Image (cartoon, rainbow, N blue to C red; front, side, top):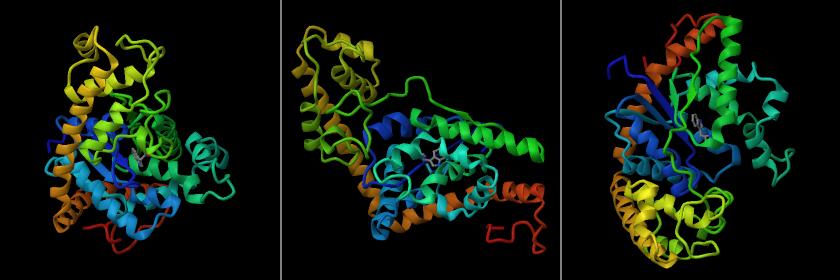
Length: 346
Ligand code: TRP
């Protein structure tokens, strides 16, 4: 990988058996595209997934299922380092340093914590959920990435990473370049099929409002045909006035690769039902192919583990010198066994 390529870095939590259309069209597809002209690092945020105490067997399965889906989506382990966050100890090492640089009030202002802890009340939420964005800042800054492709909902966490980078640089000298969120033009925002004013989300949407990448094709098509549509009968792209139809047009465009205007022209003068049937077919074909590719990867878990191990190896090579530099700057006495002695793969 030539050193001149900008670096991209992102992570996703393995919290479900399947990623959904919102994940795919909102973020994962950008990860795949960035491989063409970036030195790419992508990881499964398994430590972040611990913040809600998942069942151990379910977590193990989901890590494999998630890795297989990333490969099926087109992440190419020859070009990208694909790894598990927990395999690279430097993430938690740097997170502790950042924990000590983050104000309690500052962490308390993170809106995702407020949202996620709302159901149980902040008193019952784990401290891990509270410090989640600080671990995320470590994930990011460890790799000095130029671009961090994430969905819109991660903007505030990215901002915290930038603040922590600036604070560290101010106190200890120029160490971390400031990462940019990479919310690409053309990233499709996908909404809940049953409530098209809310984004498609694992935690908030009902099963019929979500298309999972691993949905059985017939079921996925049925969900599209049962999607809530708007009053009136004209097919046009108008997210405010016609959120339901606009969402279907967005999904059509995202899968077919035609821009939304072209899709609108194609269905001009036709009925909602025509669009739903055509899109249902398109979606069924898409998830059918995706599911098949994923199952091939899942059938060879040993190979999946090898892919993740190679990715972790590359990630560690990038991350270990950063932690060594940080530890030295903040005044920790060097480990006499050498900077890379702590199981860092040297
Ligand atoms: N918080 C992110 C999400 O829920 C996942 C994540 C963890 C992440 N660490 C990251 C994303 C680092 C980008 C960079 O989507």
